[in-house]
Image (tube, rainbow, N blue to C red; front, side):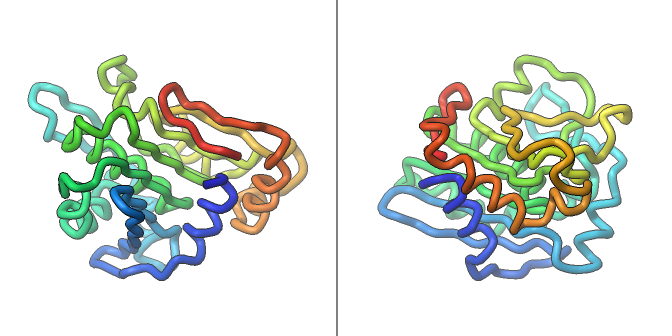
Length: 219
């Protein structure tokens, strides 16, 4: 599936609403599961977006890492709904897709799949369109490998993709794919989904394959 098609599907698929403003959708094609996470659509989402102090995520044995507190809170609300699908051993391929607020959740969902389904690490794919920074602190190789198949799609000058500021210790994970041209949009307009979609569509045909180490998608 082309990135523009994947993003369009993320924007228009019907979502299920859960507590703390989490919205998710899933599709299954044979043994392949697609997980979609919706962008901000209300005051609760923005409250969580701005709740950016880092908090420890302790579930990795001796490994302790830190994430954006608001996004982690929302992910913990949606995790029980997605867990049974992710842990279904009949599934042999998973793609996680999110936009904006949902892209931040996709970062955490992708890591959840990586940790709980080690059998899928070679085929796991993640895409965060207009993704804010989620992870804070040290950038160890052991931690980075969890997102080696995750792609952050940034329309140049998109303000959201620069938040929380790197000066506060936050950073992007995976591979950063930059689209568009600098100065083409305002910092706010660069984040608008219609403009991200337009820039993705411009790329189609001009670039045959995007590879994030082991993850491959047509664009």
